[in-house]
Image (cartoon, rainbow, N blue to C red):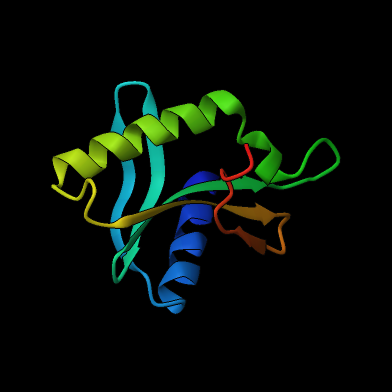
Length: 115
Protein backbone atom coordinates (compact mmCIF):
# COMPACT_ATOMS: atom_id res chain seq x y z
CA UNK A 1 0.00 0.00 0.00
CA UNK A 2 1.46 3.36 -0.96
CA UNK A 3 1.83 6.39 1.31
CA UNK A 4 -1.28 8.22 0.04
CA UNK A 5 -3.51 5.13 0.18
CA UNK A 6 -2.40 4.43 3.75
CA UNK A 7 -3.38 7.97 4.75
CA UNK A 8 -6.83 7.57 3.21
CA UNK A 9 -7.24 4.24 4.96
CA UNK A 10 -6.37 5.81 8.32
CA UNK A 11 -8.85 8.63 7.67
CA UNK A 12 -11.61 6.20 6.63
CA UNK A 13 -11.10 4.15 9.79
CA UNK A 14 -11.28 7.34 11.87
CA UNK A 15 -14.54 8.40 10.20
CA UNK A 16 -16.10 4.96 10.56
CA UNK A 17 -15.25 5.11 14.25
CA UNK A 18 -17.31 8.31 14.42
CA UNK A 19 -20.29 6.54 12.86
CA UNK A 20 -19.91 7.64 9.23
CA UNK A 21 -20.63 5.26 6.36
CA UNK A 22 -18.11 5.34 3.52
CA UNK A 23 -19.89 6.11 0.23
CA UNK A 24 -16.87 6.48 -2.05
CA UNK A 25 -13.09 6.35 -2.12
CA UNK A 26 -11.20 8.43 -4.69
CA UNK A 27 -14.21 9.81 -6.55
CA UNK A 28 -12.57 11.11 -9.72
CA UNK A 29 -13.92 13.18 -12.57
CA UNK A 30 -12.84 15.86 -14.95
CA UNK A 31 -10.59 18.26 -13.00
CA UNK A 32 -11.43 16.88 -9.58
CA UNK A 33 -10.68 14.12 -7.13
CA UNK A 34 -12.38 13.66 -3.80
CA UNK A 35 -10.52 11.35 -1.44
CA UNK A 36 -13.48 10.20 0.66
CA UNK A 37 -17.22 10.74 0.61
CA UNK A 38 -19.00 9.73 3.81
CA UNK A 39 -22.48 9.95 5.21
CA UNK A 40 -24.11 10.05 8.61
CA UNK A 41 -27.90 10.30 8.54
CA UNK A 42 -28.76 13.34 6.36
CA UNK A 43 -25.22 14.71 6.24
CA UNK A 44 -22.86 13.98 3.35
CA UNK A 45 -19.24 14.96 3.95
CA UNK A 46 -16.64 15.39 1.23
CA UNK A 47 -13.22 14.77 2.74
CA UNK A 48 -9.79 15.79 1.53
CA UNK A 49 -7.00 13.77 3.13
CA UNK A 50 -3.55 15.33 3.36
CA UNK A 51 -0.60 13.38 4.67
CA UNK A 52 2.98 14.58 5.13
CA UNK A 53 5.99 12.94 6.72
CA UNK A 54 7.56 16.21 7.82
CA UNK A 55 5.95 19.50 8.79
CA UNK A 56 8.97 21.81 8.44
CA UNK A 57 7.54 23.40 5.29
CA UNK A 58 3.80 23.41 5.93
CA UNK A 59 1.11 21.51 7.73
CA UNK A 60 -0.85 19.10 5.53
CA UNK A 61 -4.08 21.11 5.83
CA UNK A 62 -2.30 24.11 4.31
CA UNK A 63 -1.94 22.10 1.10
CA UNK A 64 -5.64 22.51 0.33
CA UNK A 65 -5.44 25.72 -1.65
CA UNK A 66 -8.21 27.74 -3.30
CA UNK A 67 -7.97 25.89 -6.61
CA UNK A 68 -8.19 22.51 -4.86
CA UNK A 69 -11.23 23.65 -2.86
CA UNK A 70 -13.00 24.88 -6.01
CA UNK A 71 -12.38 21.55 -7.75
CA UNK A 72 -13.63 19.57 -4.74
CA UNK A 73 -16.80 21.68 -4.63
CA UNK A 74 -17.37 21.03 -8.37
CA UNK A 75 -16.91 17.32 -7.78
CA UNK A 76 -19.28 17.40 -4.82
CA UNK A 77 -22.01 19.06 -6.91
CA UNK A 78 -21.53 16.43 -9.60
CA UNK A 79 -21.71 13.60 -7.04
CA UNK A 80 -24.87 15.00 -5.45
CA UNK A 81 -26.66 15.38 -8.80
CA UNK A 82 -25.48 12.00 -10.08
CA UNK A 83 -26.77 10.28 -6.93
CA UNK A 84 -30.03 12.26 -6.71
CA UNK A 85 -29.00 13.84 -3.41
CA UNK A 86 -28.89 17.50 -4.45
CA UNK A 87 -31.10 19.57 -2.08
CA UNK A 88 -31.92 16.38 -0.13
CA UNK A 89 -29.00 16.27 2.29
CA UNK A 90 -26.82 18.65 4.25
CA UNK A 91 -23.27 18.97 2.94
CA UNK A 92 -19.98 19.64 4.65
CA UNK A 93 -16.36 19.76 3.51
CA UNK A 94 -13.74 18.39 5.90
CA UNK A 95 -9.98 18.06 5.77
CA UNK A 96 -8.18 15.29 7.59
CA UNK A 97 -4.54 16.03 8.18
CA UNK A 98 -2.13 13.22 8.97
CA UNK A 99 1.34 14.27 10.05
CA UNK A 100 4.56 12.39 10.49
CA UNK A 101 5.36 8.75 10.80
CA UNK A 102 3.48 8.70 14.10
CA UNK A 103 0.34 9.34 12.05
CA UNK A 104 -0.99 12.21 14.13
CA UNK A 105 -4.50 12.82 12.84
CA UNK A 106 -6.32 16.14 12.95
CA UNK A 107 -9.90 16.36 11.69
CA UNK A 108 -10.92 19.83 10.48
CA UNK A 109 -14.71 19.83 10.23
CA UNK A 110 -16.35 22.35 7.90
CA UNK A 111 -12.89 23.34 6.69
CA UNK A 112 -14.08 25.36 3.68
CA UNK A 113 -16.48 27.64 5.55
CA UNK A 114 -14.09 30.55 6.04
CA UNK A 115 -12.21 30.19 2.77
